[in-house]
Length: 52
Image (cartoon, rainbow, N blue to C red):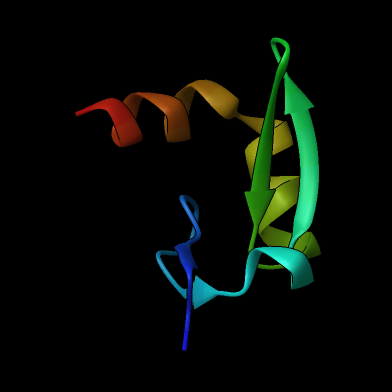
């Protein structure tokens, strides 16, 4: 059972198993390293989509 959905791939995952990254003073947790790296490369893309 997933507790959180990855903002990059929309896959459900357990936050304690995810990959963390701090951006602008806020921690974000991702499904895996690939999703974290895609976020790092273009955070505005994912933050804009999440706020829409």
